[in-house]
Image 1 (tube, rainbow, N blue to C red):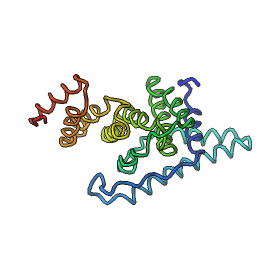
Image 2 (image 1 turned 45 degrees about the horizontal axis):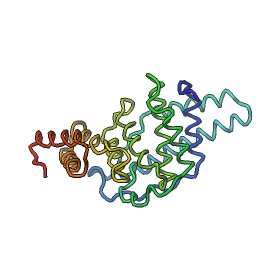
Image 3 (image 1 turned 45 degrees about the vertical axis):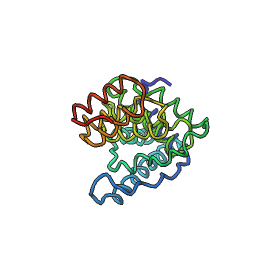
Image 4 (image 1 turned 60 degrees about the vertical axis):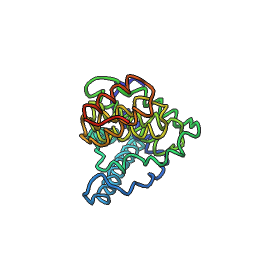
Length: 246
């Protein structure tokens, strides 16, 4: 399906995803992102987002069933605008599954997950302007669905990298979120995308301004990787940060 066709395709993506049986999110880590006691409030927000989306989808299908195309179009337009609004991850621990589940990931081929991944890759980074932003959102919906529904898929580490790339892109610029997904890619399968660790380090270093996490990742590059260009960049940055390499 051509990527230039906007809605109803973004609506179609969301409807297909919502139609699946979503697995429960893995337990969130006990350490929050900040000192703000926002866990329950963010959980309510996430639940409300899903309920609002589902209500619009159900209303649209109801109107279509009874041939009321005008009001079906209204629901479709509102759903389209809902997906265009930035949905920030107020708590990373509720957005990114914990690294511990990596020991159970990558065990088997999941045809359904493969299909969703192929669909996401067919639109990711495509188009210009609003087309580009819509396609990044479509890809995000599909990739997040894989993580939730198929955590045992051998595509999950690829998915983590692609989500990191999407959140780093100009359509989102959610750098802390992007870095967290790059880290999961490394933790779940370090051989999937070798540059994931360095991309996370750069974000923590230059965008998030988390100096210690950047240092830790640069050090991991010097001790765990073999690519000389990545090692040289990490070593150079460690020296600039006045941190001796090991």
